[in-house]
Structures are given as C-alpha cells and as structure tokens.
Length: 161
Image (cartoon, rainbow, N blue to C red; front, side, top):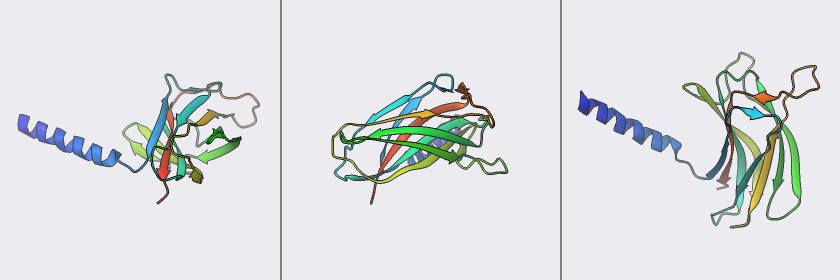
C-alpha cells in the first residue's frame, strides 16, 4: 500500500510539473483577504529573452464563490520608459448559465485574459503595470469595497512565435 501511495504521489507531481510548464514568464500579486477597491497592484517586469515581441495576458484567480460574472480593471502600462497607456477593460468571467469561462481547479477558477497583442519589450528594460479593480453593483455609484473571493492577479508575458 505504501508503494502505491509513493507511485501515485510521483505521478501526481510529474503531471503537475508538465501542466504548469509554459513558454513565457508570469509575475503575480497575491491578496491577503480579497482585492480591496483602493488597492493598486504594481507588477514590475522585464523581457529576459531575445524575442522583443510579446503578448500580455492577465491571469486572475478567484474562488468559485466569486459573486460576479465579470470584472472591470483599470490598467496603467509603462513600457521601456515611454508614456503611460491607461485602459479600462471589462472581462466576462462566466457564461449566462453560471459556468466559469476559466479553468476550474478544485475550489478555484483561473482565467487567462488577453490584455495586449504584439507588444515590443526591449531586453532587460524595466516595465511597470499597475492595475486596480473598478467594480460597482448595478445602479450604485459607490464602488464595491472588497472583492473577497479574488485570490491573486498576475501578468503573463508570452513571446510571439
């Protein structure tokens, strides 16, 4: 029985390693008790490859208990010392049926959300992305104080092939 458990654990670790490997880099920010409305996340990153052309994606993880079907993000991207590019983006996270669009893993859902295509990143230059949420309930002006079920947000940088 002990040999079976060890074999199962080894197979599980190998599958996890294979499923987690991808071509690119990710920078993450974890939240302690949800994503507070006034909490601005700063993600610093650089291009450590020889490929200057990259696609950028948000990686958002939340618990299945997340109460909304979408999320609004306000981003501020500063690349290669150039001017800031500010965007307000809405992402749909679930279908009308309630099924999550992202990948469900036990009690969490992970969304890979397209942010920018074919962005030129100069090798080893420092780039900064700040992002905050901008969620409100329908017919209300005041923001939602805390998105309790949000676990983390990250930036995935994938070289364009």
